[in-house]
Image 1: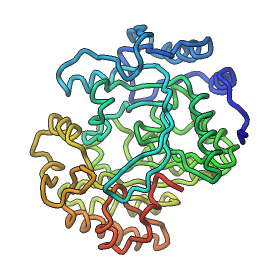
Image 2: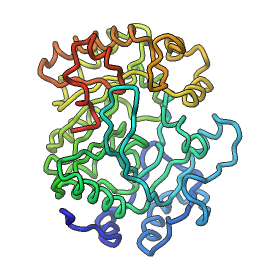
Image 3: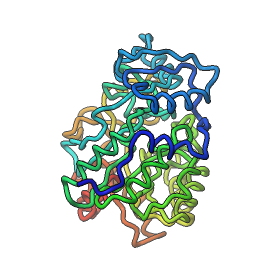
Image 4: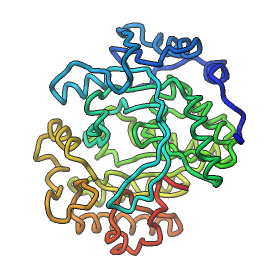
Length: 388
């Protein structure tokens, strides 16, 4: 039996829009809005979609109701121009298989449940791994899925079948909060997880817009996690994202509201003078935010995402010059820096963290077992950001 109050589409619409108006996120202004299959399939979805696209009166709205969200052709052969056209396109649709379990092989990822009320992301991180995934490579539009009640019902069924506390991760295939000012989805998701016996939410974001979260009853069942880099790295490689100062301010506000808060420092990029740059940033972060956990990670990129990154930054960019194409290439097929360099980077970061907060749990993302062993971190394998 379901262990939460069932959320119907009318309830969802009422919960999202009663007393609030959709607001445009600071860093997303679509020029084109496409209504794909399922986006208008009932009156509540139609009202939801209309209320959101009315925020952008200058955008061109197109109905393509016979085409699923992942088959929208943006009619641009050049990969870079296609990528940026997608960043200026908003697609509404439905996602019938939005709840999945990851299936990483060849690294220490514990694999975890994740779900997708959104697709892709309006930000422009030059190293973005999502940009190289097959669905995004073909149609890199920003997406809002209008079947959130069905998605939450899928989570309920999966969690109840497992019969134990289980994290459902929002942020693997999108930014978990970037579009929340538009949708207000957090105002349904957080209470859903708060009332659930087993399901827990872990949400990853670079957003600083947390107004919708602060007055919600969450019961500690929602864990909020921020992806962060120092300002010197953010300015060069994370275009169109909220600055680190804004993210830290949002983290502090959510911690005051009682949410467990985590940080993911990833990808760590060895720019010139990276040691003092990251030291200053870590010390500030750990002094200002009471973290539940911190996870470190480096570049781990597939070929198509690397190609797009190098089209943006040039082949001899700061990231690519350290990537190892043959020696030490991990079994999962991702390209990384050399194992020796990663161990050196993580070791320095962990030293700084331990000096600031010796008790803070530290984990590594998408890494190999020998790296954990070299850093005496084998006890943290499988206890990284995306799981409880």
